[in-house]
Amino acid sequence: MVLSSEASEPRNTHSIVLSEDDFQRIIQEAVDETFLSLGKKTEQSIYSQLKGKFKVVKEDIPLHIEEFATALEEILGPGALLLEIEMMKRLHDKVGPGFKYHTGNDSLTFPEYLVAIRVFLSLCTSEKSLPKEYFDRKFC
Image 1 (cartoon, rainbow, N blue to C red):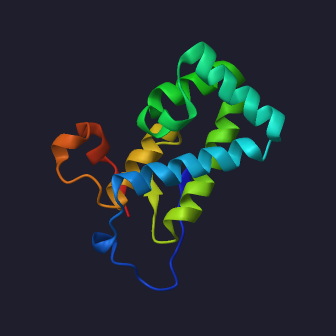
Image 2: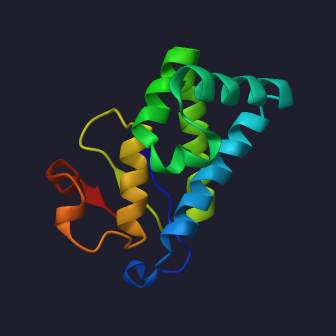
């Protein structure tokens, strides 16, 4: 999967910086909006299962993305991928058209996408803060 968007005006990606709180907020908003698009009862059911069975509370989702993605896949099976794609679309809309991500293969996970956005937004200040394999991909 390749998610990309061309900006009408070139964007200086090095000057874009969000606080960690802002970054977590846009992740939470994308998750909330995606779940709510399924209906209020479905949203509540998913959050209830995340909390009860997987100990992933709504407010901590941005801090535990791997656990969240794994739990979502266990709850929804293959349908989780459709929700993750919708979350990625919503995140892309929030980050803006300057963000482009090209995978080295045909797959992309929600956690990998969030790492790519984090790099794009210059939230990571050193290579030590991310696993080495993320620097083998092209960002922007």
